[in-house]
Length: 319
Length: 178
Image (cartoon, rainbow over all chains, first blue to last red; front, side, top):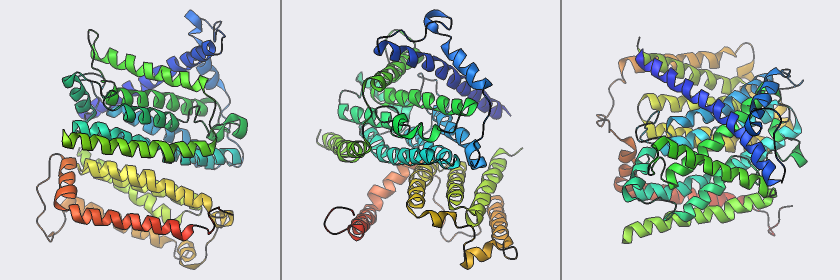
């Protein structure tokens, strides 16, 4: 019975963090985008610097009418937001937050992370098909092509780190960086760049938000969603933004390792720094075209990540 | 309460049920999504058997990559193929009222066999099973890249040849498509 209680407790913690993370990031994204565009962002909702903006947003979303479009594929349409939340929740299982703070230190942590995030496409496709709307379907197919093309360089870019440490556990990778007092971002700089660009594309955020592309597709696969169901997509998206940043921190930036402060604080600080850079890029760069997107993925990032794997392996062999 | 047993029954039930729905779903997109559930269920069964690497690869390759390809194949086929309500031939016959129960009976039988094997162990394996390795990833890597390195490389050359063949077969003369 104890195991079950523990599992339940872990799940509750993760879900609570998911909500908190979305709460902070909704406000942060509005505020940062405001400053980037030389305006103040939210100010008048209440709290310091309009910090209650998220509360107002959430209240609005919760009280909206629960609307199901006519002609929608009801099962798929209602299940899609939940399905897109599943990978967002599951990846927390292997993220090492501190030296001993990890929900489950799996032997195959990194592979688990990659395999769970590959589910994201199913939720998107269910939303796109279930909406019975051509914009939704086109958006979903674009998202599929994009996720598929960028998942390969994303996974390959992490293999350099795996070769260097000889372990797939995320905890082991952080330990290796702590031992040598060297973050992998320096020897694996190419890997880090490929990882970061590919992870931005995986998150469907500008400059890679072809799947939503509001000027062409209204909102892509979100088009028919509103209220609480749309909120579930948004929560999953913000959670994915955090977890991919956290994975980057774990693999390349020393994870929870750092002086003075406790480990979990370093982990959160570094992760939210990467999240900030992600938001910064989103509000600075314009959207790329779909052919540019595919070219970047297949003709630039993919060969670069393969070269990185080969170079790392060769270096370790002759050293 | 025997929790692994409960997990096995739930996962096996989901796997077999969605396998049955793959065969009988009227819409091909629904069949594809049920196929994804089947793959995920098999991945869960691998986790239950503590074959964690195999489970992760099952999820990554089948539920992730293969499903993407299946969905794209569906989307690139013509709309009338997707919307066809009642296919003729043996598939149509399976969905008719008289024979429609067959896939269901098959699925139930499969589930019963799975349950019996799970409860009593596989009967008389032809070879004695290896002792379960503690870290299956290291074990698989050693087998793949040391003991069976040559067959592994031959298989990858075969796959590469198949891929190049597919590109050449679908390529239109003159370079540009249409």
